[in-house]
Length: 257
Ligand code: DAK
Image 1 (spheres, helix red, strand yellow):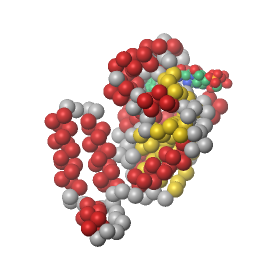
Image 2 (tube, helix red, strand yellow):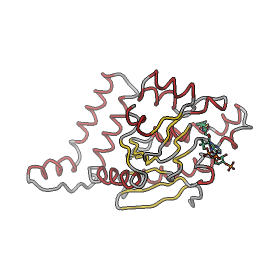
Image 3 (cartoon, helix red, strand yellow):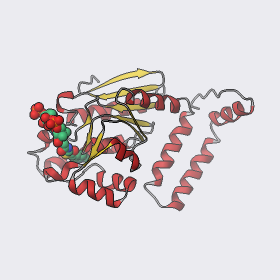
Image 4 (cartoon, helix red, strand yellow):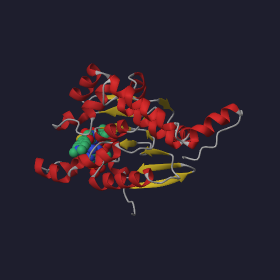
C-alpha cells in the first residue's frame, strides 16, 4: 500500500513511522489512522523489524482526532465508521512501540502516545485531553489508560478542564520516560529502540505482553500469566544462547527462535 498521510523509514531492525499532516498539526483523520493501522500491522509481521518508533514532527506529534472531519457526524455514523477497531488493532501491536513526541500530543494524539509502550518527549511537548472544550470526552482510552498511569486526581483535572501539561510535568506524573532537548528526542527514541532490538524478540514480545496484562487483570492472574510466558521462553533457542553467552563471557547472538 502507498502511504500519503504517514511515511516510513528503516534502520537495521527498526522502523520509524512518521505522521505526515503537518499543516493540520497531524490531526488524526480517518485516512491517516487507516494507513497507520496498516503500516503497524505489516511491521508487526515483518521478522526483520524488532522495534517501532512512532513520531510526528517538532511542532506536533498529533493535535487529536480531526475535528473538522468529525463535527457533522452522528452517533450512528461513528458506529458505522467503527474507529475503535482501528485503535484496538494499534493497541494489539506485539512489537515494542516507542512514541517520540514533540509539540502537541492532544486528545487522540495523547491517547495514541499512551497506546505506545514508552514515550520520549522533547522539552516542547505538551500533553492534554482537551475534548471537554469541544463538548465531548476522550474516546480512545484517555479516561482509562491516563487514570491508571497518573491517578484519579490528576486525570480528573486534565480531562475535566482540558489543561495541557508540560513534558516536565508529564515526566513527574510517570506518563513518559524521558525529556530531552528538541534536537535530540527522535534520536533518543531511536537509540532506545535499538537497545531493545538487540534483545531476543521472543523474550521482548512475551515480556511486553506480560507487562500489559498488569493493567488488565488482578495480581494472581497476572502472576500466573507471567509464569506461563517465563516457562515458554525456556523453549526458545534464544534462552539457551543468552545464558550460554553469559557463561562464556561473550555477547549473545539472538535469532528470534
Ligand atoms: N482537527 C482538525 N484540525 C486541526 C486540529 C484538529 N484536532 N488541531 C489543529 N488543527 C488545524 C487548525 O484548524 C489549523 O488549520 P487552518 O485553520 O490553518 O486550516 C491548523 O491545524 C493549525 O492550528 P492552529 O491555527 O489552531 O494552531 P495554534 O498553534 O494556534 O493552536 C492547538 C494549536 C493545537 C492548540 C489548536 O490547534 C487546538 O486547540 N487544536 C485542537 C486540539 C483538540 O481539541 N484536540 C482534541 C480533538 S478531539 C475516537 C478516538 C479518538 C477521538 C475521537 C474518537 N474513536 C475511536 C471513535 C479523539 C478525539 C479528539 O482528539
